[in-house]
Length: 68
Image (cartoon, rainbow, N blue to C red; front, side, top):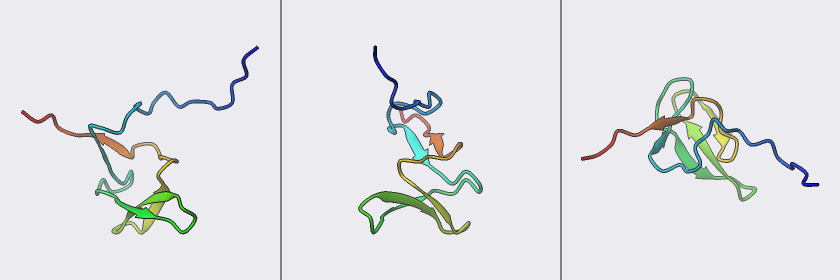
């Protein structure tokens, strides 16, 4: 019998390509930083809030407009 180790959130896309990483509160683009523990995190300057790259809050990905 196969055990489920993680509950996968199906609301997130499989790939980040074609999406902008934005603040879910104000909609501004987030800045990517390397954290002291070796992980990466995103930070919103205007709001003064952030999150780890692997822990996306709802509304953090916005589809990019299609070029061409």
